[in-house]
Length: 388
Image 1: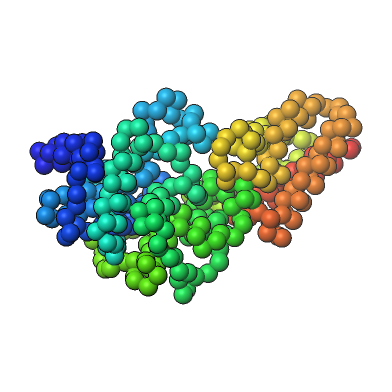
Image 2: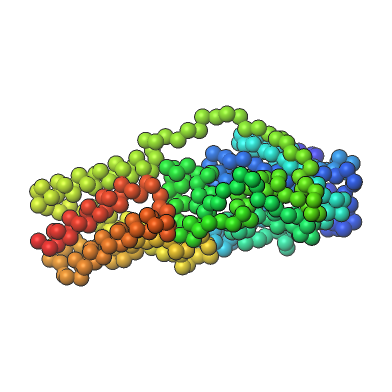
């Protein structure tokens, strides 16, 4: 670490112990930084942070919400269960800038039109939040994240004097549609998200709820008023512009292509079984195992975690957990009547899933389309075999 960074850290460690005695100068500026999307799924939605710049005092510091607490006991288990606390971070602007320069991501800055008292109050709030006993908070992707904290802290520091007006080009969207703005539909990231998240994200988001995404923090702040009539944003600029890069997706490795090939294989084996009047039991074992395992995971995400977005997930209509317990009965030559009834039940479930999709109860990932067709054909053939 550079000497100036060490000095900055030492200075603000002392400041945090007595924030009330550390006063910003009248020339201090407080701004909101909006970081553009990155290449990885974790960075696809961008980031927001506060910047405190005071040339008189020689400080230029960035506060952001959403840092992982890797030191937390049972980190991965808590992450999976939605019980992981996140941290507020504090970095020098130089380090912040260099980090996103390295990862080639845009940084936009909006200098806020705050009074000296409001700036001081916000700075004190951030410093108090950064104390070890206050740094942690229970993260929620939609309702309490790095973006929503910027909005909420701004409102607290200004005694709720900010009025967020709806932008002129505003269009109503569901939470899932807002996610798809940042993640390509036919990508593995979108595929995983659409399977894991339930129908609760297919409801229409309110204008305020749009601000769970950093880009809408930027857009709503740009249109906001403070103290009834003044613009909240005094000036806007692009601090760092992303350089053009070739990050196009490869359709040959996309979910639709891969699952399409797998579905063709399933259909081919089923056709071959039909022509030879045989049944490839190993295929049924694989299909029932995979759909059953996925179903168990989805069921746990719904009922065994604190994730609000994984509830009411109708992907369970095709990934049914009980499939795991039917494998032993499916492979037998002589079947009981309940097994035939169960296969009919699975066919009905696939039809219900299609109905849910058509009427908009839940939107499913497009990569599932060929697989659902293949499963339906296989189940119908399996039912024919059991009836013969």
